[in-house]
Length: 283
Image (cartoon, rainbow, N blue to C red):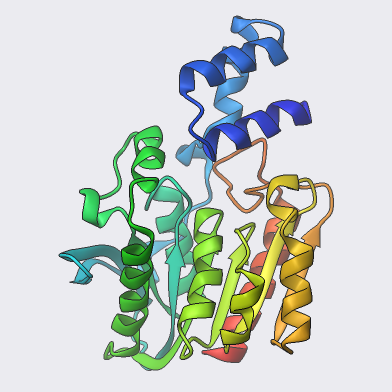
C-alpha cells in the first residue's frame, strides 16, 4: 500500500482529524471514494484476524483497584498453578483496552508472568466499542491523574499474593509513551519496554532506574524524530537501555489486527527481545 496512505491513517489516529475529513483525504490519495472504501478495512483494526492465545493454561479475571478518583478496571492474567511470578503492566494504545491489548496481556502471562492490562479510560466509563470514541476519550484524560493511576497499578502488582514484588511494564503507541513516563516516575520499576512511543523529556532521564528497551519502526517519522535527544540523554546518564529500529516497517508494526502496518518478522523479534528482558529483570 502507498506509504502516503499509511501515513495519513497514522495522522488520523493520532490527531483530532475527523473521520469525515480523513475519508476525504483518503479518497484523494486512493483515486476515488470507491477505492477509499476498499482500502479502509486494510487500514483499520480487525480483531478477527489476530492471533489468539489458548486460554486453557491461563487464569483470566476482571479486577479493580483503587485509583486516584474511583476504581480502575483491568484484566489480570496468570499461568495456572504458578506463584511468585514476575509482574508486568500492559499499556494500551490510544483507543483503550481493546481485544488486541487483552490478547497481548494474555501473551505476556503465557510467557510465565502475572500480567495486568489496565483500562486507562476507567474514570470516563471504560473503553467503548467505538474506537474513534476511545481516541476522543483518551484526549480528555487528566495527564497527572492518569500517570498516578498507572503507578497505583504497579503497586497493585507489587502487593499481589502471586507476584514476586518485581515489576515491569510494556506499552504500545500511546502506551509506549506511558511506559517511558513510568520509567521516569517509578524508581522501583525494574524494566520498561516502549513500542513506538513518545520519548521521555531529556531533563527527566536522570530519574530513570529501570532497564529500558525501545522499539521503533523505521518508517515512523513522527515518533522517530524524538529518538536522538532521548538516546543522547540515556547515554549521558548511563541508563541501562537497548534501542532497536526495524528498517522498512511502520508505526504499530506489532499490532497483528492492523494488516497494512503489522510486520510479522519485526514483531516476533521485538517480542522475543521484550520477553528476554522481562525474564532477566523480573522473572
